[in-house]
Amino acid sequence: MSRYWFKPKRYGYGATPITWEGWMFTLAIVLVILGSGWLLLGTDAPRGATKVWVWWAIVMVVLATSVAVTKAKTEGGWRWRWGRD
Image (tube, rainbow, N blue to C red; front, side, top):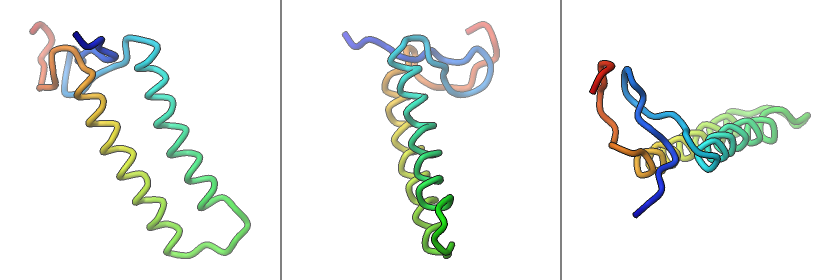
């Protein structure tokens, strides 16, 4: 049996972390997005459209991966919730 890292939100769609692994995974996602932005866009090198597109590509891949992992590690799955389910 897999140990779940997230639980479904009470209202709406999605999940929230409930274990230290879930919180660390969430923190890692935030740090990767911020770090890649700082490295690509925050340096003194001239800014070009290529850097912005590379950063957006990184963000999209990281977010798609995070959604897939979060859905797999959520107890009860994802669906729209109205409170008491």
